[in-house]
Length: 449
Image 1 (cartoon, one colour):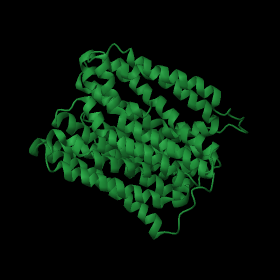
Image 2 (cartoon, rainbow, N blue to C red):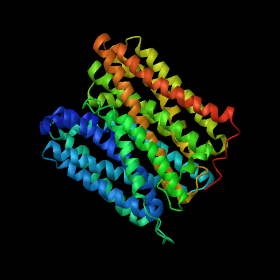
Image 3 (spheres, rainbow, N blue to C red):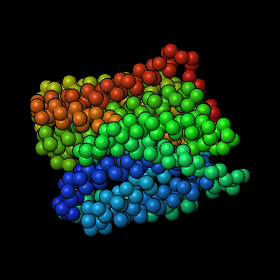
Image 4 (spheres, rainbow, N blue to C red):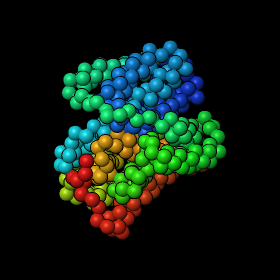
């Protein structure tokens, strides 16, 4: 639900505009506000899960997400909907780190790889199939009120998941001592991420770009504060010594770069298919389905073999994703017209297979040497990097895409937009190669806990 709601709302924007008479600024915040608050709470949420119990925080986040979805579906004004989306983002950010934290806690060795494989399949399917599911819902429920069912569909799923979670999730044990949350660290990190993400997710809203300078200052202060706080014998929000673990620091950097390319793929292709070729929302979703299928199958497979291949499997995945993207760009440069969705099916399938061999295996290797007690915090930091990467990649791709569109048309714009994805995936491949070939042999992901 939380990952679907990143992409599913994009195809519902025309329906929201018609149903609520929403201005462009409100529509922008319906999309970007969710991504913003989602990214802001990931790290504190991971720390809360580590300290106060992951099952408890998971169920709290899941319940809050379900309630926020109901509020969004019943929205009577654009402002109401925007506030509900902000709350949805907070709930999603609270829930997500607990998933990886629980995997660290409950699974070890090969079983952990399988669990991360299923998680990667969920990521790939949710991201790619969002436009398809959104298009189906709008088509079935009608243009004027179809957008409401994009949110209402979460209600039965959320209620069932809460009840099932109460039954199967492990009970949180009593903590020996309650650690303070490091409120100064929370404020510095939250302020820094807000100043970093706001100009990226709000390009059309005209957010001041000088906030990026403020972000650098606040994040530098955060690092200094965390070091000082730990030296004084307290428990910091983020233990910066995590970054000294090579598999974690390399993997987190790789994930940031890959998600910058991975997310921007869907943005530029969706705009090109819908606006450039006149595809319906449903047709756009169908055109992106090969990527989702390839990603789901490869993620499940990758989770089973990553313990043997380590980061080398990620390199294979990155190479396949890069090959698929380059082939997609080449085929679209031949101007296939309305047949573009069919022509790009095979290269998008290859790119999806590559993506499935990147996301879950990288999660497994990156968190392999992290102590389970810090699994939620480490996952929160890693996922925050992915959210930053997504925002940077989408901002770069959309800027180049629309900049080219004004002068050269859709065919040139899609080529330039895909170049951004190719660039970031190439950078991720370089990072993976650097770890494997330039440094000592990576740790066995089946070890650690």
